[in-house]
Length: 439
Ligand code: SAH
Ligand code: SF4
Ligand code: F3S
Image (cartoon, rainbow, N blue to C red; front, side, top):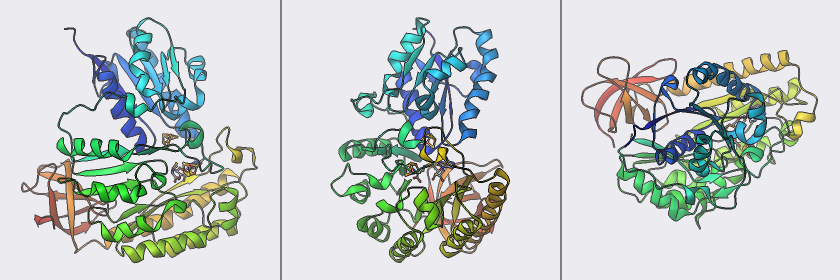
């Protein structure tokens, strides 16, 4: 048998790309590839890319530039671009960087084995179709190797919402849900391989309709799997938070008290211009109902500042909404005009104004984030330990509320779920002492 070929994958963007990278590595496993964490060791380099903001997309070209020397040294090295930039730019990538051998979009990566074989003949391989066949049905079964305690599981892909700023409906295509039976099968498999926490993924995961009971129906069924201790899901759209999903937060113990629910802006005028199809009041009412179901829920959000037409008063509405909600975690971005989206045609807010607003918003959000974290000091929380920390004897894991928690203890190992008393809150993590097994 010939020595295995080496595959180096670099992943950008959202968690769905992290999941896709795993599946792509598995698909190429059948072609004799093993993964490596060193680009200079690889026979194939695959960049799994993100197109969401200009900076993310430009990174791909600078990264490709860095690989040129490797390719000069080793002409057999294959270089591939996958993900959302591949989908958005297609053949343009090979035009701009002729050393690229392969371009594959997020909905056609099940065809990687054929595409890789084509590159071995010296030809370029390009596939950015939205094929009729279901990608997941055409991927090889996942291998049975042991794995870490947490896993992502994509259950829904694509988006039909067409927010005026966003490329996702174009790069990922229409909303599609995987059948519940398939998801259950994959979840059981992951649990057999050592997984104790599953995060269900979708661009609009709460629009999932592969189960008769929707996403909450799927969550309730998943909760019946022995050995699966924790369930999370991301990302949700406010308009798809139905009554039963809200109720599930109070009823399903395994569903963790953390919800990422992007609102983007607190101004109704801006929300309308963004085509979000909800108002700030609608969002606030929704938060109230979810908190009534699960009072200790930690909320996370996404915000865009400097959207075309945003005035100082609109921005103030965003700050007011943030004050009213109180986020435990948040991601905020300066608006980036994306080719092909409706908002790209509109007049932009000056870069300096947007920068200044971003700073003000981030200052408020970090203050809230820190307050939510500090409030954990003195409390006992359950922590799922994921890996060793940098210091001797240190382990790090996540609490129910998704805070990183460090302990120094030989009583816990990777994959353990333990009760920890929090003693200190640092800038981005908590530390504590193990007090016993999880509740
Ligand atoms: N499907 C998810 C997330 C989409 S992308 C959702 O609907 O919330 C993640 C975040 O990137 C978005 O929530 C938004 O805040 C940000 N984003 C998307 N397009 C952007 C753009 N053109 N400029 C700046 N931020 C953007
Ligand atoms: Fe993009 Fe809006 Fe769809 Fe989210 S809901 S993926 S922001 S279009
Ligand atoms: Fe980026 Fe595509 Fe995800 S654009 S955020 S990698 S869906």
